[in-house]
Length: 127
Ligand SMILES: [Zn+2]
Image (cartoon, rainbow, N blue to C red; front, side, top):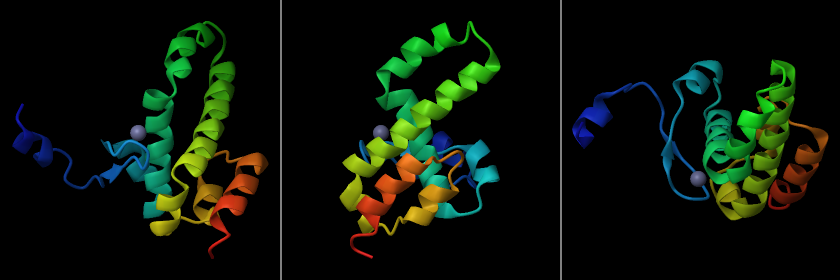
């Protein structure tokens, strides 16, 4: 498949980029779930971060899967929260520049108080 073919796939699906590594990412599932474009971009980044930036996630997920689905979901949530906080710390300037705010993090699934506190600390300074 050449590049032109790739661009013809799923035209409706909004592509976004990882603010940490610049990789182009998208998710048809998240696109259909999330109406707000910025929330969608963050959700894509969290998913991408979990799979491509967190090495221990892919290594340990097989192990965790021997247990129940509930435990897997809890583990995924834990890793997602860490990913959100890493994105906040590492991509701080870009997040501010592109207009991401605390409310966008608040709208992501399962965002906990610790992550929101960090988002306020990092993103509200310049607002
Ligand atoms: Zn990345």
